[in-house]
Length: 260
Image 1 (cartoon, rainbow, N blue to C red):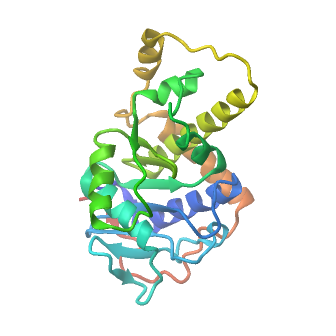
Image 2: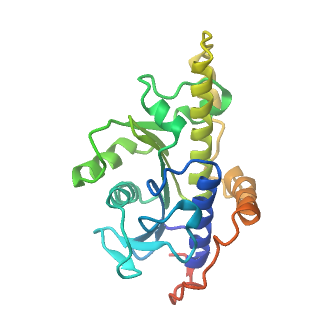
């Protein structure tokens, strides 16, 4: 299933905005980590390896196939770990069209904590039941690691890669970005709560389950689409000008609607 009602140009714009917002929020890790968006021709968009997130534009994104080939532009630099993560996740989940993987200080901090993410507040409770875990086994660059990532994610939409970082997926860029924003917020809150040294108050499991059931991700009028992502795009346009540059993007599919 691909994102319906979007042209490739619009997908490039939204993904470039997501990269710029990651940099704006201080979530980037020099030229490491990556965000992807699926296209209907069995390829996906990814950042060119070596480009800072605050340099990414709609036209600079590369198109990669599921065999690890850079389809366009020819000779584009590919991050092998990025290919492994995103081909593994997108390949195992036909319902997923966007994946976001980060190495933030707080996300990595929580990934190193044995108990994982704790339901310390209502926001953490909202995502607690949608969170998977993937054990660390080295740099993500092997085929078996790609398959294991897909298995560990299963039907969840968030994942903590132990001793590594965070991951969020969604049927749209809006959904994936809302989920990673929420997960990173929760990781920061947990790091601060634990640093305070006071005894933590954990809610009962019934409350955690009740809050987690409150989100309706199937509604076309869901919060991530209706309010959150339009606001994020406005923020990117104000504070990260130039991300939506498509002058160099002359692919004939630019204005074709991606609705298969």
